[in-house]
Image (cartoon, rainbow, N blue to C red):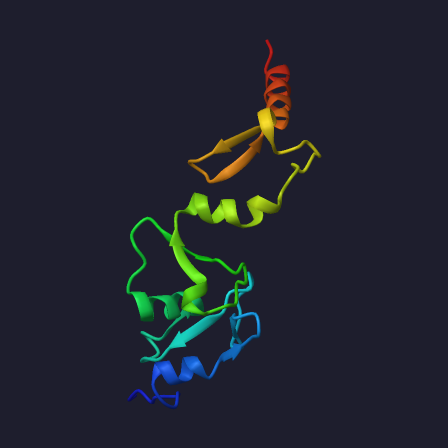
Length: 147
């Protein structure tokens, strides 16, 4: 069966039609969003090669080229459905976490402060850990496994 192009115009034209410019400077994606709130854009092609890509990623790469190895794209504006390339920059995963939800979390799920001596940063996983909760977990584990 021959492939029929379902989209009108170039990818750039289709992409730009999905942008809503805001007074804040953000370019919001009016197309489909994934479960995390990121916009996604369908690249045209035969059914076997057509695929969805994150809209902000497509926009950034269109202007800047491939994302450097070991880095990920971060929304400086903290708006996940913003596709304005100047609002996006490549950073390490740790930096992305530091800027995002990490920066807003002040206490662990058990209410201990995530600061000072009670804070341990697991750089391998890109997570902040509560030392008080870790101590409780270790004590509980040892008490269960005493002989």
